[in-house]
Image (cartoon, rainbow, N blue to C red; front, side, top):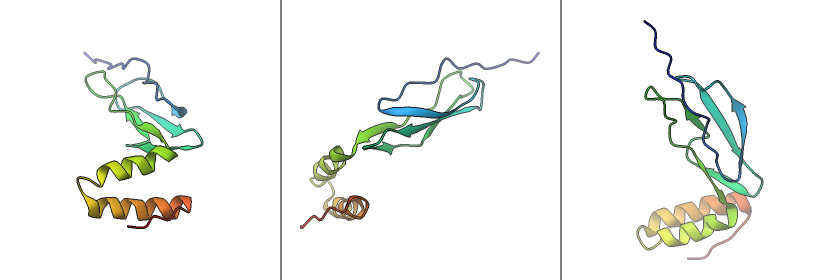
Length: 98
């Protein structure tokens, strides 16, 4: 007997559009793309898993919030925060001084 695993509808991701939607069967993927002004945190897709659930969806974060997130991390890991800010500044032409 063959059992077909069927996931429910793919999760909705705030501030994102689905760019590739496949049937909700085991192993199939749904791919997301963040709207303009947002960046993606996490993998860009969800996969229908063997237990009929989707893998963790990405989140789309407003680009301005990215700098606030970096600053909040500075309390726990200043070196990582500095590297993250330098990477962010290359993407958005921002300059931060330590």
